[in-house]
Amino acid sequence: PDHTGNTAVDRIVGGETDYDQVASDRPADIVTVIDALTEQGCAEVEGWPGSIDAESIAVTGHSFGGFTTLAVGAGFENTVGSVPADERVDALIPLAPASRAFTRDELAGITTPLLVMVGTNDQTTPSDPNVDAIWENVSSEPLYRADLVDAQHQTFSDACAYIEFVPQLPEPNELVIEVVEELGIEGCSPGDMPTERAQDLTNTLAVAFLESVFRDAEMITEDNTEIPEDLLFETR
Image (tube, rainbow, N blue to C red):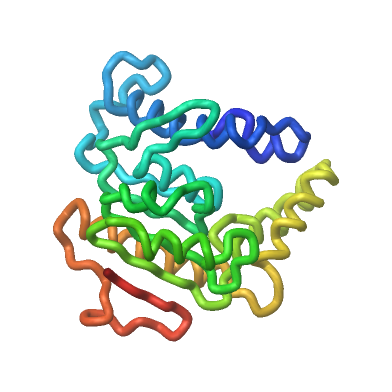
């Protein structure tokens, strides 16, 4: 979902809500969406609940969305409010997550199967301490970690595609171009893992993980798959 007060447009026009409010709202937004998609009677999603498998719910997100993913699994509380962990969620996939808002005990409270992915060159949410803290403290079973070699923070986003697309619009907004190009520095620069390769790795790992959680399929491991040189993969 778009998170009111914390969307790309809010950032571009300087209309973002303060951090504490956004951090509290984000996991609540996810819970609200799950409620709407699994319970009859919500006009905004009429027709959808009957197509949803309420026993197979996963949450994923990038950066602040990675924080949000963890918050849904751990629950989150700050000065604004509290949101309990959503027990309906059975799989978590945080991508280049921001995890410094969580204590060790809060991370240890996460038991949901979890696959975390990050780029080895991430400068915005570097693996130390963000992913390292997750890897060392969560109680998830199973737990997987994938470090994409030479990937950066925006490698997991569509920043590179936006850099090519936005200037081709009939009347491109210069402020939008500026923001997109700024984001693209960390993911679309020479030497970065190509976006297409990152997407292949991300999709392959995510689908295999979800298949293993929800359909009892075999997850990719070093025992059954030759791990490529541009991927550092661990399981616990």
